[in-house]
Length: 85
Image (cartoon, rainbow, N blue to C red; front, side, top):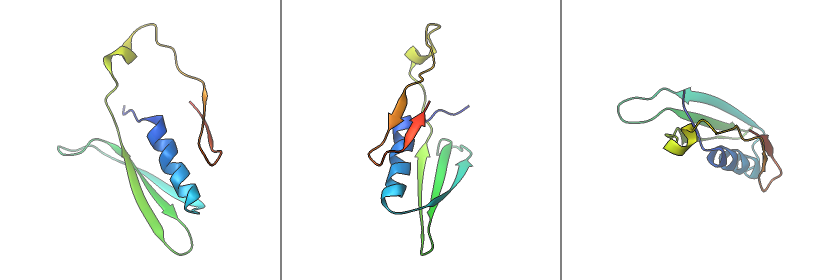
């Protein structure tokens, strides 16, 4: 399983919205010797496509404590996109 920073994902999607994109194609790249697993975004509109990616990260050790509970707070971006995680 791969882990991603929510803020990085939200910022990337927010950027696509600000740039006027209406659609996004999302793919996952498998890790290799040089790069970690990543989520690849291809933002699409009638005129062009813009690509970007977010790399997976290692969770810090404190995230593995038995007292950890999942976060359920919403995350709002500047353009009003709301994520619940």
